[in-house]
Image 1: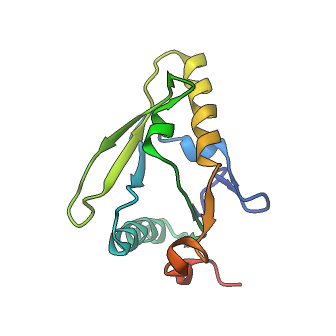
Image 2: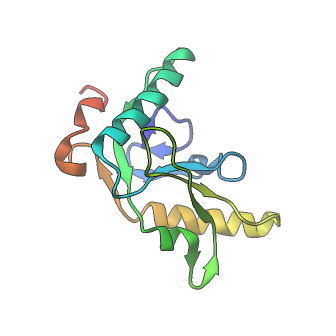
Length: 140
């Protein structure tokens, strides 16, 4: 997770908030597959940071939510979202997580289930991949 992202991450609890899913039904949530090289993560963060700077905001990278694609697709045998490989230049492990329901109540249930899965394994940049990305964290 990077910040600032209004209403997306609670720095005190270390948990993702519903705001992180705002793009689920629109453009989808960008993700990188586990086999992505460190360079793919660096490119992705640079794109996010450059976009923030253009809007006059700083951006820092403080954590990574890790989850198996199968747990993102379904919970208790019920489909909650779709995962599509959307490889782009220099980021061949790029994927997008998309919402699948059109019914409002079902969308909300799916978002809750997806958020629960995303919050199961959040790792700080100090720990993720041996801290190789910790230089992107907000200075203390």
